[in-house]
Length: 240
Image (cartoon, rainbow, N blue to C red; front, side, top):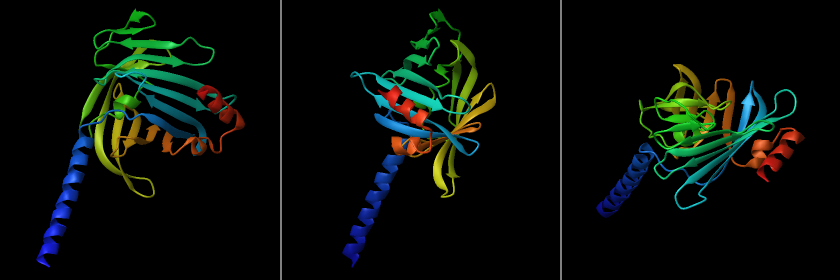
């Protein structure tokens, strides 16, 4: 009997140590994981679009984060693609926003100088494009009270939008199932512009862009379900 109790105690200690190690890794942040991610976009309880994100490693050093964002509110679908290069240390170095019929917006950042549309742009805190939050949010350590100050770059023109900050709050019960997710708020010039909820694997499960709700789903079929034929055709076309 005592032998079984000792073995049970050893097993419980092993489980506790493994869980503790996993939590320490989660707290300290983690590198971006390659693969495809899909999200639905809703507004006013109505599904209006999708987001498809691809994370790849085109060479041995850098990580490339590519996003397609499309919404259908009034009239034909509106869409944009972004491509962001992340260097081994975690900083981004190049970013391009492309929209149909408009000149691409480009940013380059070497850790000291910021250039947009070929001209140097002033900055205070490290800059981040407004559609390039994903690599920042998902690599923040899960530490309540952690703050990362940034200069937010406007995606509609190669200009700085203002000073911003990502603020980690802690675990919250989210949704009807009261799932425990980690909350991070984003502020621009002191006003909240977005809230993100992450799981322990640092995946953004839910995001509230002050009205527009993005929710992680399992695949393209789930992301595109209920959208118009135009949106489905667009998803196929831009991924080709």
